[in-house]
Amino acid sequence: MFDNLSDRLQGVMKKLTGRGRLSEAAVDAAMREVRLALREADVNFRVVKDFVARVRERAVGSDVMSSLTPGQAVVRVVHEELADLMGSTDSRLVLSSRMPAVVMLVGLQGSGKTTAAAKLANHLRKEGRRPLLIACDVYRPAAVDQLQTLGKELDIPVYAGEPGGDPVGIAQAGVKEAVGAARDVAIVDTAGRLHVDDALMDEARRIRDAVRPDQLLLVVDAMTGQDAVGVAEAFQERVDFDGVIITKLDGDARGGAALSVRAVTGKPIKFAGVGEKLDALEVFHPDRMARRILGMGDVLTLIEKAEEVFEEEQAEELEEKLKKSQFTLDDFLVQLGQLKKMGSMEQVLSMMPGAGGKALKGADVDEGALTRTEAIIQSMTLQERAKPSVINGSRRERIATGAGVSVYDVNQLLKQFAQVKKMLKQFATPGKKGRRMPRMPGGELPF
Image (cartoon, rainbow, N blue to C red; front, side, top):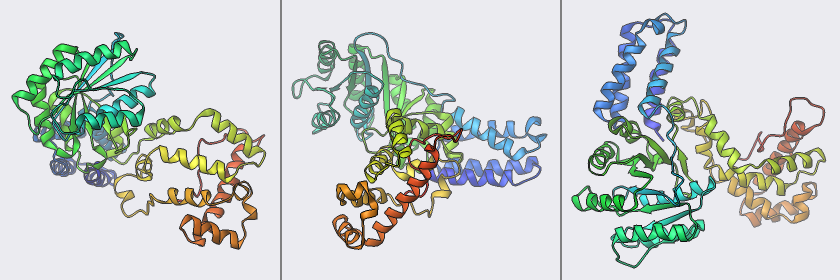
């Protein structure tokens, strides 16, 4: 995400930090490049103008110019202004204590609204909520079926009402169904249109007035750039909304929508869709996103993702196995499975400081390596997984054939497993103060 903008801004910042002293002329030259980078990223022209003016005003101030490291001071200013542009602080979903709390989603057709509804339901369930999805899009072919399929996949109930029924009536009946089923959140997926029109707005207003949502969220497609701003302004004027879910952010190399919507409407971005899977919805943190754009990484989000999939009990159990030299390829397989739950390797690496944008370009990030590793281990017998030392030449050939890989790949895995086992055992060795078993295997993992 933001690859093009990130590359350009990081290049500008590198030039500034490479200087011993800064002049106003140097700052002006940098601001011209920043302005061009933002315009190429399809950021709204009013937003670009105001942003550059604020950064320049602070960058030529005495606190920056008199700094021992003025270039780094300018980078700090750009980071702070980027974060402020996107909302300064994260704005979490605030739901009332009524039964059920209601969240209503609006947006144009094709913005990913129905999938966003399912992702939001999944997110709220992880927080201990019991959501119900309400399908009010009676116009788009298979829209109701799509939501029901997503609900079934997540094991979250979907209320659809009668085929071709009145969307307002379906929404009201769905909220009543949530009460009867003891569901504490009702998520209303409304119909979209290919463009903003009176029928769309009128129906959205009638549903809003009927169910009185705690949160009315606008779903916009990050790939539409400045067009998303026009959509947001239209919905703000005629329906009003409390916040934004921005979808397909992982596929947006520019960033125009994310950097413009909040600045133009004043409404916070609450969630960002960062992948196709139903768990690929993140709370939007402006400060963290600004760090990603400038190549500073996003360690906090990386830690949160790890905490979601790596449980404390499993870590302690693994530590005990290592102390007793009982760490097996089956344990290794479990750890790799948890690592995959954190997202693609490119997503994980993009959160590491210095690993975003240009640093990843040309890097050999083999997304299929974990899958191949799993196939190799699953082609082994239980004895071979528990005691890899028994794997001789003929066994390696059999394993390679079963996994559809080469013997070389099998040899590499066994070598890497031995290295990881040795490294992890050092962390788990009793008496070494300050060492603690890490949550996931490090070292030379096969990717």
